[in-house]
Structures are given as C-alpha cells and as structure tokens.
Amino acid sequence: MIAFETGLAQVLAKSLEPEVESISLNQALGRITAAQQIAAIDVPSVDNSAMDGYAVRCADFARGNTFTVSQRIAAGDLALALEPVSVARIFTGAMIPAGTDAVILQEDSQSLVDSNQVTFSETPSLGQHIRLAGQDIRYQSEVVAKGHRLSAGDIGLLASVGVSKLQCYRPLTVAFFSTGDELKDPEQALEPGQIYNSNRYFLAAKIAECGAIPLDLGRCPDDAASTAQFLLQAADQADCVITTGGMSVGEEDYVRQQVEALGFIDFWKLAIKPGKPVAFGQLQGTAFFGLPGNPVSAYVTFHLLVRPWLLKSMGLANLVDIDLANASLTGYSATANFEQYNRGRRLDFLRGVSRINEEGQLIADLFDNQSSGVLSSISAANILIPMAAGQKLTAGDHCTILPLSCFGELKI
Image 1 (cartoon, rainbow, N blue to C red):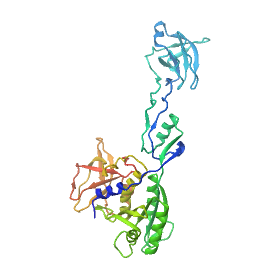
Image 2 (image 1 turned 135 degrees about the horizontal axis):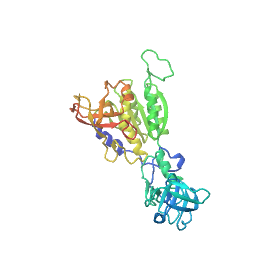
Image 3 (image 1 turned 120 degrees about the vertical axis):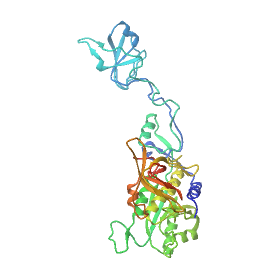
Image 4 (image 1 turned 90 degrees about the vertical axis):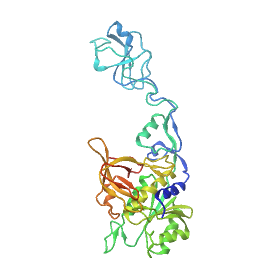
C-alpha cells in the first residue's frame, strides 16, 4: 500500500502525449486548445458609439447648444468626417466619424420642428459614450491560452476576432465495464441478493463530463476467461480501460490477476479512504484503472486519479484542485463546521457541502453518514475534505476542501 501522493504522481507521470486535430469553431465547445489563440484584429475594430444619440465635437458647445445634423450613421455604415459646427445622428455600434469626441444620448436632445437641427440639454464631456477601437481585445493579444477548455463564452470571443477553425487536442476514448454477477441494470427486476449497477451509469457520465468518449462494454461475468476477453477487447478499442470491482483478494475477484497476466500493475492499494483497493497499470500498452466495486469508492477514486489523468492526457494545462505538473492537491481553504478525528492510518476523503455564511466566510459542513456504502453522500456533497492520518479538526479550524466538480471549480 502506497501513499496517495505517490500514486497520483505515478498516474500523472504516465499520462499520454495529446494528439492534435483541426476543428471548426462550432465543434469546439468543451474542447481543449492545442495552441495559443492570438487576435488578428482589434475589437472593436473602430471607435464606435455605445448608445443611440448624436456624435458631437465638445469644443463646438462653446458657441451654443443648437446644431445642424450633417449625417446619419447606422451600425455598419462608413462614417464621413464630421462637418464643422455640426453633429451626426448615430446609433449603437455605429462608427464614430473623424472629428468627434463625444456622444450625447438621444434622451438629452430635441429635434427642432420642420428643421434639420437639434438642440441639447447637456454639455458633453470628452469621450463619453464612445467605445474605443481595441477596448475589448487588442490586436496581437492573447485571446485564449494553450491548454484551455473552451466555454460558450470563449467560442463567442474567438468568433469576435474572426477565428473559424482552431487546433484542439483529440478527445480520448475510454472503455469501461463492471464485474459482479450480482449486478443488474435499472430496467431489470432484482432477485434476492442482487443490486442495481450504479457504477456503469456514473462512469459514463463522468467520462463524458471530462470531454472524453465513453465506450460502455457492460457487465463482465465473474470468471477468468470472460474477464480476460473483456480486458483485451477494451484495450483494443480505447485509449484507457476502467473496470469496477474484481480488485480485491477474493476467489471471485479476477480483474487484478488477469491484468497482471496480460500486462502489469504499477500499484494496487492506496493508503486512502474510501478507495483503498484501486489499481493503476498498463494493458497491452493501454492505460488501466481498476476501481473498487463499492460505488462511493469508485466515484472518489475516479475523481482523484482517473479524472486528472484523462484531462492531462487531453492537454489541459491545469486543474483548480490538483497541480498537474507537481502531482499535488491544492483546493481551497474553508472553515470547518464539524468535529472529526482521523484515527486510522490512511488519508481520509470526507464528503461534505460548502457554503458561504452571513459573514461571507467559506464554510465546510460534513455529510452525516460517511460510510463508503452511502452513495447519497456523493449526490449531496459538492466537496471532498482530505484529512491526514491522525489529524483532528474542530469547529472553527481551517480545512482544505476539494470541489467535486470536473474541473475543480467551487460551485456553491
């Protein structure tokens, strides 16, 4: 049994070299950039009006506040230079004419009846209601960094500088299957001693959440030949293989022995709770993760080990909660609203809920039942609270919290 940090370092050291492909912008949501994106233009490209109103020259107001309207400029029109002692009717987003240094709101103006003139109820200040060229994005500035996961906002930003195609890392295919003759799918009726296979469904969701492609191979029967067949099939079709169950030392646990026969295991058993019987290795040159059959343990070990390996192998620069370069936990500092003493010898990952109290402090509450058999603790929790062996926390102490979100963002 090895320390968690040692296991995480071994996992991340064997991440894959990401492959690059060119994709269109409308396919890029959730993808990870393989190159820095540099702006080829200023945004906005010209000075433009932030409001509907009139483009004016401030110095002209020394002569009065009634002016002739010399031109009308809508968004997309080419503005002519402002004629002396005149104003231009202008609309939001329209190009500012040369010689203009302010925009007056149409609410602060009054058109004279039967005349091409307008009068104003305010004296403008220099630069008011004008958006300068490059105010949003400067030419040759970085728009999106390499190794960044693209959000809907990023897609719009890239479109605003004229990007239609970009280089992104290829998503990995992850084959997974469950072991255990007692497992049934939700649409099937349960017989005595049987349980529903929750691992199959959460794994498909978590793999997809990471941006990878889940390949569900179903349930493997509890025998050596079937286990070997499933493992080889998975390794042949995917970049990574994940199993749940079959990693202990019982007579019906075949996964570990078959992986060792067909490949090798880097480690088996981490000094963590929940999730001690977790394995990492290689299977016919394909990365292998053997997760515990217990759903809570499987979920926690996926989050702490598989997720960072997947994201690093797909080119993500870093996570909020895990330093991918140094294989260490980071997370956030919160105030504990509980008392707990880790009397064991393993690093314990408690399930909890974070919140902001009335004083604006980040508070960590503990889920009532920390049993590894309580899957509702994962559904209710939004954080893990790591506690070292021998560590004691009392209410008011500072503690580290690790968000249970895919990319480590704290969602409250």
